[in-house]
Length: 248
Image (cartoon, rainbow, N blue to C red):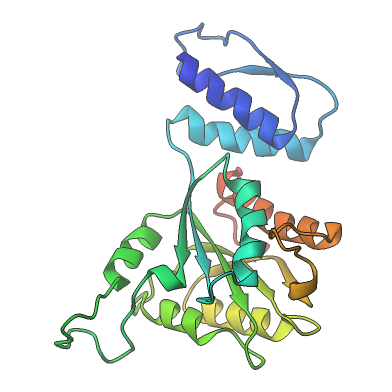
């Protein structure tokens, strides 16, 4: 592989936390597969994760993840939480972030209607979702459920939904004690339309208290939980058992 490929391998191993040294593979430096020699400490999980990521890079393709935020409010807490997830996966995936306030979607029943001056980003989003290997969806909890904004986005993904068969990680945030209702409702909706929702999820309560004025998270447990959701998605779509549904 060329220098770019070797650089990708090095960045991937560093991101995953596996020390390694670049070596010549069995096929020599012209081999299509980059090789590396791992050094302790590492474990089976880290090796599997590295192997999965390298499988993608070895073919010249990075996994594509669409990240959807269910809040439109400027400076919203959902986006603050998503920054942690994006930091976790950004170095190992091609990420497209869908922030509701930057897109325009029609209400159900308005499709094809003559609505002068009203943009419709539904088709653009459907194309991105179809091309994605996985999705990460975050919702605020409003009145005990997901936001109407997020529901509108899901409704604009068509019927049958373009989410059908897609691997999806989810989490929710709330200013109250927790976002369990929103997360549960979101899981039910996504499963109903054929999405493959991963078991790892989290609910962040009192979210307005866990971020400082700069947007940085001040609660290590919350940060770790959000990172775990993002990492589980990346591990699943790059792992050797990415098509295994037994754990879903």
